[in-house]
Length: 137
Image (cartoon, rainbow, N blue to C red; front, side):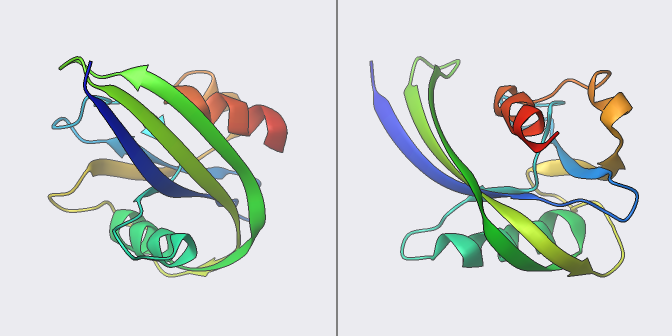
């Protein structure tokens, strides 16, 4: 099987009401319709914190200041084309944010929203998100 490795950075961003910011994968992605932490791939030569600040702004319209490292998760899954994808997810706490929430236009996400703990059980989550939520709460 072909193998591929991906490094990505994601943010745990909570608002004043203790709601978690999540983004939904656009229809063009294999994870379409699933909700995940805002963030994404680290580009060649890019520092992970810089990638996360860029990704959150692209996906949500928010400008963020990052806090400490929250976790690092490594997982392997097989893509529909048979590729074995190894993803290393570097997850940071978001210390503060500002701006107006808005969905990404023509990108890898098609929605973004604040989600309560109770709503998490009703949404199709990306598989790694549940591990993050369990550790968070």
